[in-house]
Image: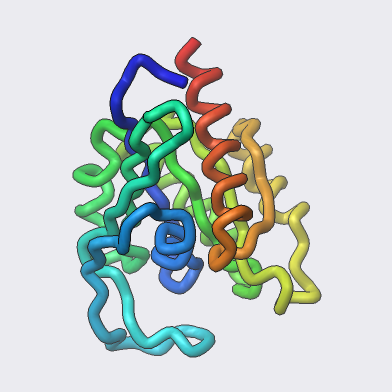
Length: 180
């Protein structure tokens, strides 16, 4: 796949989107996590949040180690973004499709990622669409068009290893194509 022994991928997005869950579902080892109890209400049954980062690894068939990092979603931990994104070959922007503000979160996170890691390859993975009958993928695609971004956008279940793996394969394809 690459001449590197390891590549770094970052999962980014708002609180409750499924970043930690996605990393857990696809990792080869239990993730190192900096989760603490939530001090503010969020939708659903979420009781903890990441305050520094999540970290785990995935070994690809060709021997490449993929280092998986998860960013905290809360804005007051935004200073971690530049630190964690340093050296990453790409980012998965994870969004919660059940959140009525999914398009706005997409816009905000794209701007943030561009601010701290301009030009980094990004794919967008949207979770919880199974519980969001009103979800419209077109709204997220419109945000990407407005940002002049052509990138894969897909729905996935962050709890499912195969689906999270597909999101990662999409990112690796985009990142490696950009590297050529």
